Amino acid sequence: MTKPAYETILLKLSGEALMGQSEYGINFETASFIVNEVKSVVDLGVRVGIVVGGGNIFRGMQGTAEKMDRVSADYMGMLATVINSLALQDGLEKVGIPTRVQTSIEMRQIAEPFIRRRAMRHLEKNRVVIFAAGTGNPYFTTDTAATLRGTEINAEVILKATKVDGVYTSDPVVNKDAVKFDNITYLDVINRGLKVMDSTAISMCMDNKIPIIVFDIFGEGNMKKVVLGEKVGTIVEG
Ligand code: UDP
Image (tube, rainbow, N blue to C red; front, side):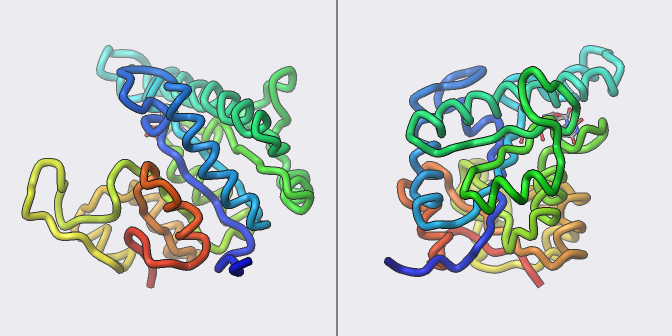
């Protein structure tokens, strides 16, 4: 078996990834595709932490657009990530992968609270750990939660799974002349205002020297290729 390039990874999935072609919520066929991609990586013996967003259900900014209090709206967004996390846990366990959900806001009837040492123990036992409820704080994003938890579990890389196959000079959906980067630095991402992750998450990765690999989640086999060190998507580092 080819040796994986990483021992521990943190996979960041946007909520929208789970939506597939649907307009809202979870498309179970799409979720099952993603689960199988994750399984292909777990089967390599890699330790996998996952942070999933909530944008397919609710984003804080949606609430503020409706004149909601930002903090309440952000809590709704964090709860949305818990719904997605439970769906992913269910899918992973259906294909035989023991999975734990840990939440940054306590809800013990549903999931464990986030306890770093406990998370490490699960990972050592080859359980997937899904970190839900973001950072537990309003005014943050799940990209920042992914960076934070990734750093805490000593992940060597953040895999940012998106609908686009890497980082482009501008939005390739809007601008057909957009050019894809194979590599780009953290500072370039920030200075050019590229929409990879928000600037808090990028600067945290920069400070902690964790590379981010942006790749297309819907390319079958991509996740495994990334973990085996093949050139897929864009690497943000240095
Ligand atoms: N959120 C938050 N604090 C966090 C993480 C998330 O307040 O640490 C809220 C925020 O309102 C955000 C929503 O949860 O809009 C859903 O997360 P995000 O937008 O990052 O999800 P994604 O875009 O990845 O689906």
